[in-house]
Length: 387
Ligand code: NDP
Image (cartoon, rainbow, N blue to C red; front, side):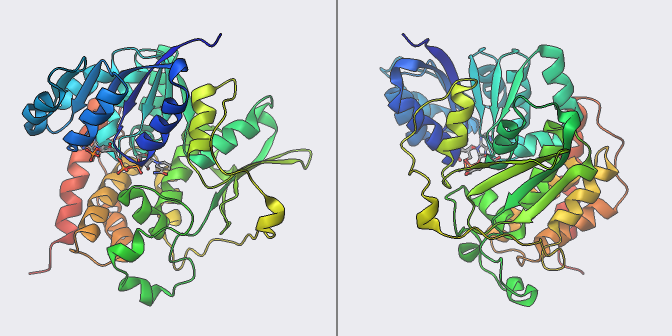
């Protein structure tokens, strides 16, 4: 008989939230849903809370709480709203917390979940990029288990199992190259939000889709890998792999390279984290390499896609730089999506903010939040039209 585990999903109404809940739906006897959260999608959140009999549904935008209460009246789910409620939801001590809020907005609840010392399935890369050492120190202090959900990091995590990290020669993150992989830089300057969110292989939320198009996603993942797999920045590589079948690889000192392959479906890495250290079934398409026929690889082009260079410099600079980079990127992506700046300004904006005097290295969650807040102000300043 399988053991029932409790699960909370922070960001339940998003793309990762939907994929996670699809797996929970197919394995109802294995999970008990504690908390589900969203930002402002009240009806969607309430429907999920009812379907999964969640103990608690939290809407981050407090102004939406009356609507959520109304939607959940007569149900067995408690309704709550605002930032403190988000943190409270993450503190309920579920056996597994899926951190799937987009952006640094997910940092405080993810840290609250870490403090419970249970399993965190981490999709919210921006939280780890911003908090870096503050988060990894909290994981160690509270005896929590951080399982990466990002497909590349989940692949690396799997390839490292049973091996001594001391024997690692290189870790290679693969990247599809995004929808503008073969575009000239000048053409990218005129790219529209609709073109940028049309990822060739993955179906994802708008922010990560834009990050994939600029390659900042790979830059953030480089920083994420630096913290999750402490082999040193010199051993981390990025490789373009348009088919997104090889999700990443680890090369060992004896010349062996281990890779994880799978379909481009986030339910595979999510299932790997949910079932870890066991395995669970997924409804995902089986990998048919004969059908795919060809897997290709090429070097990244940092002239057209400077984001990975900017991220590498930020992680090597250390201190507040990764948090500043992440905050500036979040502001710039939002500005691009709302038509305020050109696509190619996104990474330039992050670089402009990083070129200013950086605040001292953050030592605590409050420090990280302060760095994030200040960097957002600076990013907005760089985007104001010159007077
Ligand atoms: P989505 O935009 O699809 O979903 C984001 C979720 O976070 C939604 O539930 C949203 O609520 C909630 N949310 C948004 N803003 C806030 C806020 N300020 N406070 C609280 N909750 C908020 O994103 P994805 O699912 O695509 O991505 C989630 C995370 O996972 C990101 O960090 C991304 O980088 C990472 N990731 C995603 C992958 C993917 O395939 N999608 C792959 C690998 C990593 P609401 O619906 O109400 O707006």
